[in-house]
Amino acid sequence: MTDEVVGFGQGGIRTIKLSPKDYGAKAARLAAMASCGLTIAPSVAIPISACQKALDNKGDISVSFQVDISRGVRGLQRTTRKWLGDIKKPLILAVRVSPVKAQGGLGMPVIFVGWTKAIVESLTSPAKKEMAARQMANMVRELAINVFSVDESLFDEKLEEAEEKGALNWLELYDNYLAVAQTESDDAFPIQPSEQLLCAVRAVWKSWYRPRAKNYRALYDIEDVGGIGVLIQVSIPLSEDQSSASGWISVRCEKTGENKITGAITLQDGSAKTIPVSEFDKEVGKDIIRQASQWEMMSARAEKLDFIIYEEKAYIIDGDALFMTTAADITFSVEMVEAGAISKMDAVKRIDPARLIDILHARIVKNQGLEELAQGLAASPGAASGRLAFSAAAAETAKSKNLPII
Image 1: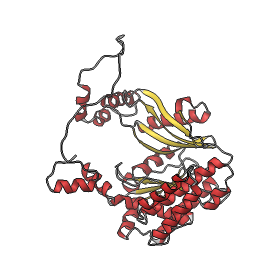
Image 2: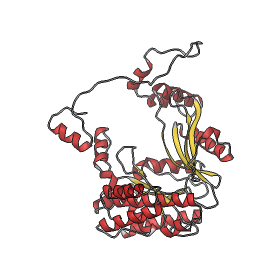
Image 3: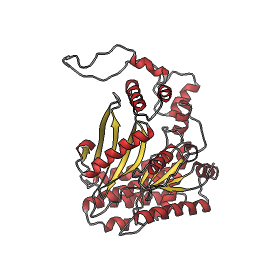
Image 4: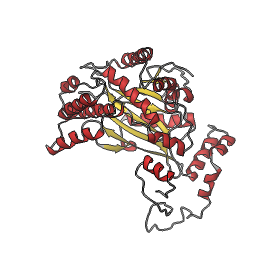
C-alpha cells in the first residue's frame, strides 16, 4: 500500500491512476476524470495508509506526513495563485472523505478551511462578509466537536443566545464559538489555517471508527479496511469582484434511464438563488453539461456530479453513482452496449438478478392516449412492531435482550 500524497487537477492533462484500495473511490474517480481532460477542482489525495498509521497513533499526524501535506498544499497555492491565510488572496480549502466503498456514518466534509477573522473583516460586501463569517464559525464548531470532543450542546447554547438577540451576527458568534473551543479543548485549539487544515484531516480520519460508521459497515457487510482516504480540494474562493456558484448535474433520468439533463445551480452571491442547470444560459452551463456527458461515455456509468463555478469556469468536485430503478438501469446498459462503451457480457453482469422482479409486475403501457387522473408515490406498504430505538447503541442494547425493535 502506497504512502504517497498525490496532487491532480492542477493544470494540464496528466494520466494519473489512483487505486481505490489505496486512495478511496472518490479520489480514484476524480483522478480518472482529470486524466480524461475534465476540469477538476485542484486536489490533493492522501492515502488510506496515512489514516491507518494515524489511528494506530491516537490520531496524531507524523511530522514527515505533515511535510507531505504541506508540499501538496503548496501545489494548490501555485495553481490558484492564492495562499493559506493571505488577506488579499486567501486559499479556501475543503477536506472530504474518500472511502474504498461509499458508506453512511462517516464524518461530514470540512469545507471552509482557510478563513481568519482578519480576512473576513477585510471583505467590503456585507452579504459576502456574513457568508464568510458563517462558514468560519461553523468550521470552528465542527473541528471542536469532531477533533477535540467538545460537547455540541455548548455551541447550541451560544447559537440560541445569538438568535434571541434578533438577526444573527456571525462574526460575534464566531468569537463565542472560538471561546468555547479554546476553553473546552484539552489541547490548544488551532487558530492558523495551516493548523486547522491538519485538524480537519484528523476529523475525517477519526470518523472511520464512529459507532454509526461501524454499525453501517456491519449492517451492509462492508469490509473494515482500517481507514479512509482524504481529499483536500480548492473550495469556492469568495471574492469581492467575482461571482461564484455551486451545483449538481446528471445526464440520465433515474426513473427511465433516458438521456435527460437534470440538476441545479445555486448562486453564491448572497441571494442563494437556485436555478435548473438546463435554464442556466451562460456558456459555463453548456460546459458542465458537456463535461457530464463526456464522463458518462468514458466511464460508461450513470453518475451525479457536484461542481463549483468560479470566474465563469466549472470545476467538478465530486461524483457518485446515480441510483436508478431496475428498468432505468437496463435501459442505460443497453444504450451503453449500442454505443460500444461496454460489452453485452458487461451489461448482463451489471444487473443484479434479484432486482429483475421489479420489472415483472404488470404496468400501464405508455402512449395509449389515456387520460391521467391523479399521481401518487410509488410505495409498497409494510408493517412492523416493537420498541422504538432512536440510536444504534439503543438498538444494540435491545437486541442483546432479545427485544423486538424498530
